[in-house]
Length: 405
Image 1 (cartoon, rainbow, N blue to C red):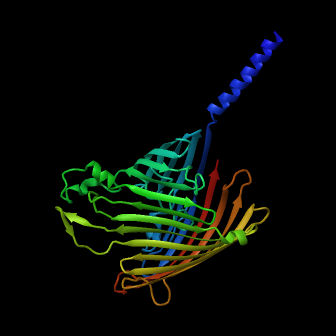
Image 2: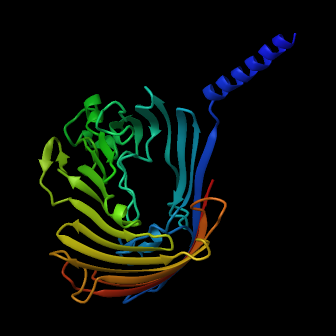
Image 3: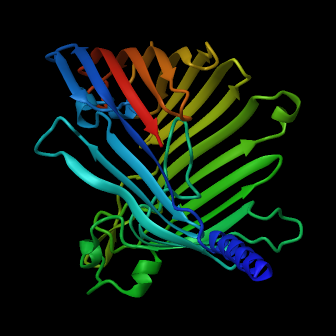
């Protein structure tokens, strides 16, 4: 009887071990982000503009404020990210709303919502739904871009059998997705309807490779002529070197960029309309030093659009106090444009200074509240002939909150 009892106990323990291996735990993770923004804008020959709103403006850049009064049109966001995983399958969602203060144009949407699964010893990953959170994205911090953001399916190949490549370091694949603009351009392009070939011509191709000494990510999105107002192909990249930090821990150089309007065409009854250049590009190069107690970063940027070349220099510094509980910092940026369609003066285009203080919570990484102030001085014109010049000064305060779980 004792032997039989012992057999039952051992059997139940073995079953429990097998069951725990076959039934992995359900894991829920996510991020909540929002804040309060107040800004006051004073501009020559224009009425002052003062607004307070519920929004997080962590990613508000000069491209949002180039035009007079444009800051209020894209003030920030309320965002909730969450992910549910169970073994080799999972789902990812992003719920967000933008243009919060404008009741007539406020949009509540799913930034992405898709399910995914790993197959063949996690060497193939298939995702389906509203795409996002791409493995071939540009990353940050200055720009966050990805190309597979419509309804579709993403196929990733992560080989582990190539002898000279470390398992999991290579990721390449493609995305079959819908049009990124309304497909009513089919008639303008001389097409009766969209075909499967048209869908294939909206694909995204991507590759990323992580090495001990570097990282490379590149994604390219094709654009079918059936899109209304065809915008052309798009491409983004991210490059990182990882050699210097082996000799100087915390030091790194990296870059990212985004190009759109490649081979852009516009059709009318099957005929190509000759039009002006639609090529637009944004590029950033970063030099960063992050030892234990501080973060120092120098950014250089270059934008191009319609014979306007804009150069940026941004310096940022923050210091960790009380074991990273309190992090004060300051940032400064200067921008100047050149070219036939420049908007700036000979003196300067724009500069701003941005002090901030951040309070980190010890119970979760990347959970914090931050108070940020910016004083910004813009000098630009209202038209390409450099007449009707206008200077604007902006003061804004943002109390932002980010919670992770």
